[in-house]
Length: 403
Image (cartoon, rainbow, N blue to C red; front, side, top):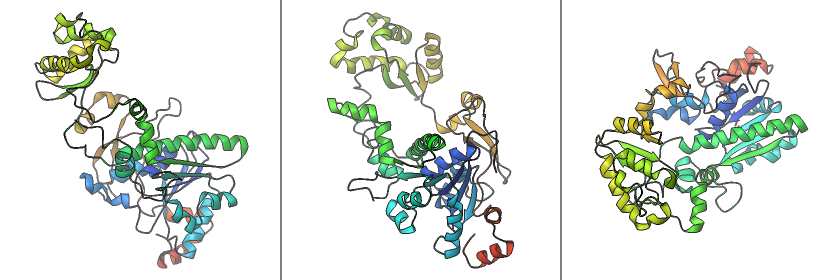
């Protein structure tokens, strides 16, 4: 399985996790060249069957929801409650560099797979865990999902929506993907340290922790009385705001340096007469006139379609963007030009567009896409490499020790 052209070639990872956050971490390590063995129950990771929630197929011949988090890996189906299944797992972990999991700590202790238990046997192991709410505090054992630990507890659900309307509807994997990539970065730092010292490490990322970091600027601003939700009709900085166009599309304006570009901005949208008005041209003087200014800008933006404004702002070199829909991203030339999307041909015969990992390496490049394996697809080859015979493998399958 080793690929010497990959950045993490020679690194062995054992993954015991489900759903999204920990699997996307292991997927990143696999794409970067590590040999990742995903250990699944005999029924498989529940994520294999969740694509239907988002109108996606869930068959072995086309399962993009599972593929996003699990391509490039090998998988083995083990019954960890059976002596033989556990024996196989112990052999896998014995020479692993990294163990990735999202199982809660109390359950890991019962299984003999906590950091303390594993590091005592294997002092060089890098133990990497996705948590819900951290290792300490009253909620350390509480189950965590991105809908709850990230969106809700992390201050996103309760703040990022138009004031006096309903909170946004969370979407699957949003917080999970961030957590997984944070954990992958921590693992790489621990691997570098292991090269220097030979010592292992415990690396954890919590969903709640990741949300607090992602919302760090705004959470810090709460120290000074800044609070959300707010109405877009009342934002303090009108040039950092959204406006509706004639064709009812949302235009995001992002002119951060208000005083420097105000005159140019209002000239660009067609109200040059206020360009040097001291009531408007200095943010410090704006005060309650922000509402009045937002209304003036809104009336101007409503006069043209979104594509017209994009061209006008581009010619003026002022930052703005259309609020894209997901289906528009699938057709976006910019995304394809940079490899942010990839075409994947499935055994079903269908060709689909899938997002690529959010890190680009100039020299190492990106490997050809490899779809995620089916449940236990690599069980035989992995067990043969561990020294089991074909007859032993057949017997273990009959006894429901393995898939």
